[in-house]
Amino acid sequence: MPVNCSSCKRAAILKRPKTGDALCKECFFSAFEEEVHHTIKSAGLFTPGETIAVGASGGKDSTVLAYVLKLLNQRYNYNIQLILLSVDEGITGYRDDSLETVKRNQQQYDLPLKIVSYEELYGWTMDAIVKQIGLKNNCTFCGVFRRQALDRGAMILKVDKIVTGHNADDIAETVIMNVLRGDIARLRRCTAITTGMDGALPRCKPFKYTYEKEIVMYAYFKKLDYFSTECVYSPNAYRGFARAFIKDLEKMRPSAIIDIIHSGESLSVKKEVRMPVQGQCSRCGYMSSNPVCKACVLLEGLNRGLPRLGIGKEHKERRKLADKLAQEEAQSISSPAAVFGEMNIVRVEKSHGGSCSQLSVKVPGVAGCEEEVKKLQLDRRKLTVDDIDF
Image (cartoon, rainbow, N blue to C red):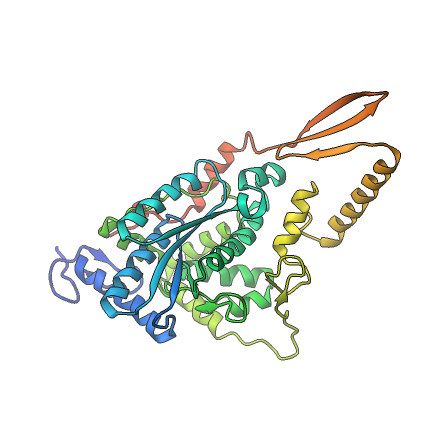
């Protein structure tokens, strides 16, 4: 038996995951857009005259965000200027394809676009980093570098704020991850709709209360152009386990996602608990609660051939670095040896009576992991329109 729309009584074509209401296409569009507008206005995210950088990856979240912000800006006269800002991590077969989608979005939405890359900012691509670190902990590098790359790109553009497509599912996952890790500092701020107020640039999340399924449905019915392939290096990410857990909770209780966010918002920390104090990195000037920021520590490890320098227990890797520096110093005193490090080959040259001999050592990559990657991607990928019952 046909079901009528709960708003206009026309034939319904979908059931909202967030509320369970049966809606027609037009009423769903209206409800989705008005909820985002309410979030923006109630949180005071924008001020007239501001320039806003939209973090654009080509995926469903950022594509819908750019589309809806432009629509609402025109409808309600926010009087803000929007610029698309993308980060090229250097992942062959993934980011190069998604950036083509971003370039098409630029033309479709008539918005300016700026692309910054890991290679130009750090001298490394994610492909090269994964060859050094492998498929475990690689997301740590990408997450740290990406956050800083967005800020650096925004500073180049001289914008006032950055908006990202983080949705309700993402925030609920982050709450669970921080609870499991016992990370009180991040747990306290991860539900904030605006972060970085004490840093260089505020970062806002207009989709804070928007379900991932509804974003997929909106993109599908609006026929938006977006890239839906999962990152080839993400199956081992810790977030994947939290995502699977949240999906199971949502099946039993759809309101679980919002409930988790509200629990995080209501969290209070005892006064005697010491919280990290934000300062500036002594090397790059980026905000950090330590003398040297995480990005600089990770970059130092990569450049010195110790990619795990910023991973795990710091004292172990620092000891390795001290030993390596001592060996290099001893070699430089005893012989004119030179060590040249490249992405996947380390060459050592030593002189022997006027002639040189060369030894090449290959750093192990990720070949042979394809099947494991595909298997993990099936269980822990992000939602697509095929996963939703309309």
